[in-house]
Image (cartoon, rainbow, N blue to C red; front, side):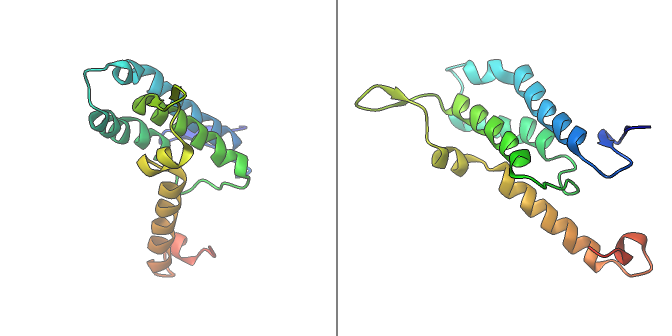
Length: 143
């Protein structure tokens, strides 16, 4: 078996995660496509759209992120690109003297940053495993 699905995540016998990372990105895209009409509506406030993003799309991106190994920068960069695209769609264009512009990367990172959230979750998972007694399988592993 080259890979199998367990609790919604794809596992490979070699421990690789290329397929899992691709499916994680496709889950973000799918969740966005399903709900993108909400972000086009002018009658909803930006605050409501951000709350919707944080409760519907972001959990799709963060599910089981504690166990993912992000060996290359491009793995995380793909997720960050998609997140910036969604946040910019929510915020809409910014009016300047020259015309309309997209919001900067700094502005979008203030709203949400998946990379920081994944790091926090991984740290919590490590703290949890390090507190386990050595008699438990996860507690005896060398992390």
